[in-house]
Length: 307
Image (spheres, rainbow, N blue to C red):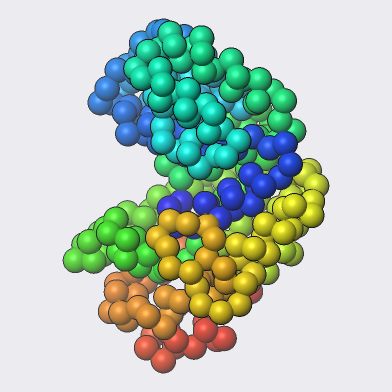
């Protein structure tokens, strides 16, 4: 989910040699289903209603993982998110050059992208607008795929969204209720049998506390070598000492541990309390500790996690 360390984690996975990485390829579909006709690279046009969102997410994730890019919406490959991929900037330049030509995309840009996809030894996607209901359908059809569900204490998640202007603090109770219901539904979905293998739930706070150890475990889970290049990337973006780098959406904050607990010394307690009122069950389920005073809020040694 949003603000759960997904950009940070994706940054590390894309540093794996010969990797293929996509940053939020489903965002266009999430925003368009039920609103706009969707044009595919193969030239077909389809319309969907909102009740089909999980199905279409699953279908498109599978097409991407199998490098069937001709069967993916045209605008997925027009996204500026491709600027996040150093290995795909050539594609982004091609996509900008052909403007709105579906034929140009199919003939000039997609062949090279498919070649890169098929030649990669790992394929990672960062997805925050896709729910676990869709992911379960992907796993049933592609049982070899590995899924990492990133979770984070809802208090810093929602406080972070306030800080970057994504939500209004005046509406914090409703936003908290909505966020934690979605998270609860996602967690409940993963209790189904399909998630008994090739699935791992990862707390952001544990990644921040022990970046090297936790990422080594994630790479072993995925069957990928925890190479020196990957270790160096973890050290550079997460294990520096000193002040936390100030940036809203970057993965490189230098000191991951300090960044993960900063909310405890800088947040308005009344906002924290309002989030807790709506999210207490999920806070407890994920192994976090509720706070009942400003002193408890700032006592990071006591109340960071139960584990």
